[in-house]
Length: 65
Length: 415
Image (cartoon, rainbow over all chains, first blue to last red; front, top):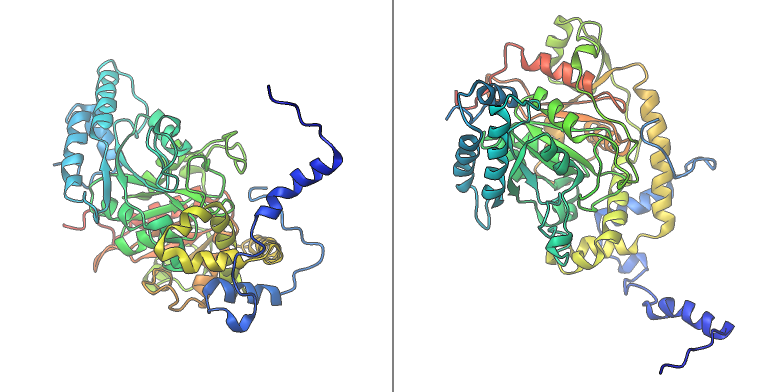
């Protein structure tokens, strides 16, 4: 018969951390601009980060009022 | 046969008068579609048995005088970007067939007694890796050639609209949320709209009315149904039209009909960049594993993976301010007329920074309805695009109907 495992604080923390530990630290993509290949999405993202929307604009919206 | 090139209204007239039988229509359409079937053809699969069964039901209903509207007995095409019952979707082939349901749009069309007859080919993942070069050509091809009266597909970045412009048929992308997105490819949750390609603007309206409606399975559904009532929309006389570079003949026609024309404002900056970032983030995240297995999507996926939460949120905040600007810019206009040629481009990057492309991208981001006509040869109505504020479909369809009745219109490209 399987012995039930007591849920301790340490075990809970380890269980919660496991999915993050298993994930790769990065997606193996170089982050330095010099090493990046050009691309439509990269260029778009760079232009978007240069723009400054108003501070009080939320990203959530409704399409049909 | 008579039904090739027939609009939905004409087809329904033939059926109700008893001039043709529903099964004959299905049989003839399937025969025509067979030439398009094949690994590289527009038709992925012909659903003949299913459609014949539905046609038999329609014949029984008509025999006892039961009519259900203009879609009754009409065969139609469904893009691979929409799910059909008992078939694993193209974007998730691991789904067990018994768990695959109809997309909400397909299920509603079945309810109106239209029969899905052909699964139509779509580029890999809708061609999302091609950006503004993505096109749903197969759907537009079968409709413009008169093989089917209409087809439905998913428009996420204008892919359906560009195909209609290229192939020469009508396409209506409705206001975001009008048609439930349940069962459609997760190419972009905040952009994707189930759209219709048809042979007349009236047919687009009838199909949209049948497909629309609230759906608890779709988080973006506002719970409203579209009613196709162009007779209650603003007539062309007195219609306020913003012109973003309409063709000269079209402009002259509008002026003759008494429309009030004014030049459209210059669009705000960055709509194309927002569109690219939003589609990449949403589709890349949803379809990561599938895109990783697709050879031609590797560069797209690599860029999508690099996008940070900061960049997606910046794009969405800029989109929100663009939406507010769009509603203000169209406060004084009922319809915005767009030239068709620059954004029907074959080259993805060609002329991308022009004002018409920016207007189209803004309308897509704002979830506004867009209606396009792909042009009809030397004697035909010139190609154009129409857009307006959310919920303006009836206004667009009334104007399009009037334009289609103009002296330049012809129904059959082989006339």
